[in-house]
Image 1 (cartoon, rainbow, N blue to C red):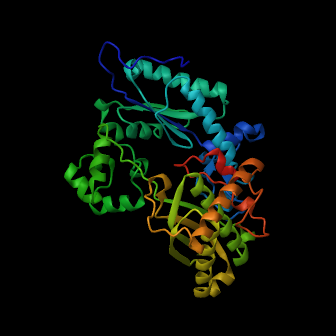
Image 2 (image 1 turned 90 degrees about the vertical axis):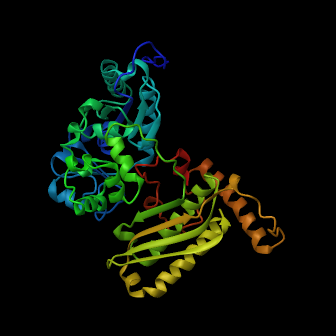
Image 3 (image 1 turned 120 degrees about the horizontal axis):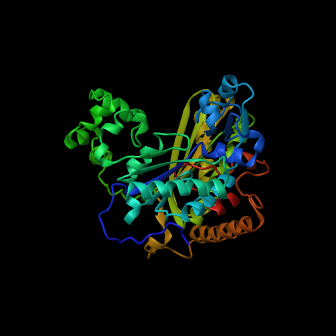
Length: 434
């Protein structure tokens, strides 16, 4: 039973706060500090791979105060903070903590959306939309996380008239902040922010705004909707401007368009044969994920970055498939093209490999091909391979990741190809068996 649950309908007007947004502070690093007492109060960074040539995917509050942040190269973090603790990422642990935090949050208010591994959005209703009740709920949520999860996993909370502003509010006071944005206080409360503080405004859009002589938030918020549409070359600018003004803007429906995996290679894995083994393993993982999602793909792509600094990208159209064997053959064909076109760069080594599958089709949404020849040898072989792949997925789910692997031959690349969390996508538990 939720301790602060209230009915949606109640006598009296609604208040100004319609959304509560929770953003966990320095999430991965905080989880590590909660797990390991010797890391508490110390500068910590989380590394995605066993190499000095990758970047931190999280930095503790203590590390940030000393100039190290997410995206800082590991070797640079060691230079800036001698003795800094560098811990390997444990993505399965972060997913488990995510679900524990969700349960703590749900004791006080229903979760509308898990926006990322470390962010939750909750719609406020009834008396919850008033300041006093909103503050009470926010305090109760923080106390529940401290009780159920631990004192070292903290969060900033924002309350605002829409989800977009509530998210912005969480970044206005860290760590452990609580910021309320009232529509009556807009736009002045936003003037002190930079473009980097606004979701959806990256470096490219910042340059575009500067070319239009918009250099600060006051200038952005003074734009007419027509001007915003012209700068963004579309309705996105007008929508963002409305959201910054407190309007509840309906979010566009997202459609899955691709499945991909990418990996920055540790120094020990940069030789072409090792990189190829990692790339094949990523292909097998992506294929397994494709089957779990009940999609087929009609295009496979490969992208690499060379140690020398160059890049190569290739893709190929294929029959609609979930077949790991067909996808691996397509991968090998593209790899051979890359090697033939760039032999010198391959000899020096590769820094990163990425694979993706596009032109996705949900299996239950496809119209069967009336002209498919069930007796065709290639067609029959592909269907048999798909059934075999599903069986292999089941064995890995039962006996653990890499119980059976068809992507890496005899080379053990498991530690280099584990599940990674993209912050906007929370892996299912089953992905850690792929």
